[in-house]
Image (cartoon, rainbow, N blue to C red; front, side, top):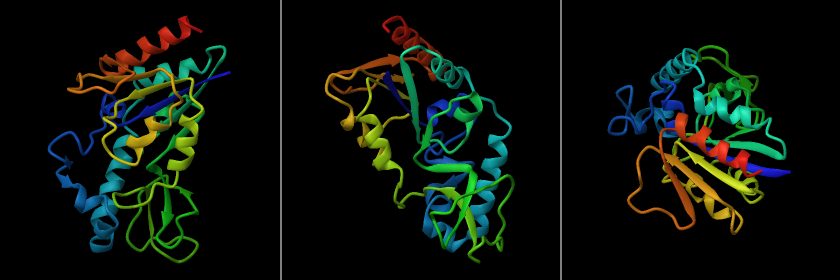
Length: 229
């Protein structure tokens, strides 16, 4: 069984209509990263941060998986291949498209935890308000890895990349660490495909760049992998 490891980022969700911090000068719905996506921001103004993520959660429910998500789900039926997706995205579009093996590096909008216990994670079907407490009696917060926090799943992600027979990178510039370091774990000689609508000024050695949006590039590369199986 060959392993296809797929690293996805904001560019995949953007084609479904989810805006990101990278859309307009580091602003997301007119908010700076420092105001809504750090532990310090939450300590300073929890109501603002909770409202921000309540809005993001509501928006995510209004969008649908696009052709890239659906193609990745479809490839799970390809004989001889196992697909694992490692995503930096906090939406559930991969799961809603049908993908069965998804590792979220930065948490999920549809989950929450308390400030007192980061290991216990709960479903979050609606909004979180100031004063909403978890079983341990502390404030509930989104199960999101904010800037400046540890990424608990990064070791599992690195171990997954190390098993890859092919790596597909979609919708991420791989500029933000620790996720940016994951390609270093790919086995020698493992083919790496990077799908991006913008040709990089300086590409990585041994990487094939497919200059196309995710909805076009993902089905194209998966068709090539299927033909070569």
